[in-house]
Amino acid sequence: MNREQALVQQFRGDGDAIRDAMRELAGGWSATVLREAVLTDAAFAALVAGLSDPHPRVRWWCISVLDHVPDARAIAAIEPLLDDPVPRVRRNAAHALGCVACKPEWYGTIAPATFVKLEALAAADDNARVRRDASIALLSVRSS
View (tube, rainbow, N blue to C red):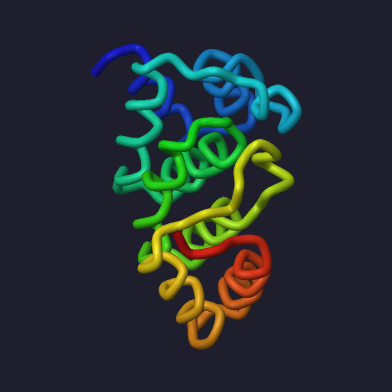
């Protein structure tokens, strides 16, 4: 396990461990700092790998960091998490895919299949919060 992967595993911990990991990976933990962060290739790869970690907290925090970082590759990496078995993770993925405020330089374009998936989540997900965040995301995105 490299240094960045070990930092991603800190997302399993408490607030201090999470903030420390975010500072090391992205230079800070506030939304303002993250919007200007430039991830190293190793940090980006570790966060993307963390999206498939067995621990839902790790997946959730990796989405949260990638949501704010102005890197177009993050959108494609987050899209599969719309199918996550944990509602909180699905909800965060839906938010990340539709939040232009978190990514002011992003144009809101997602893959057609992702748009259809968001529509399905908005209409019929078992979790009301997932339905709400998917509905909100649909207001900001368009299919490519």
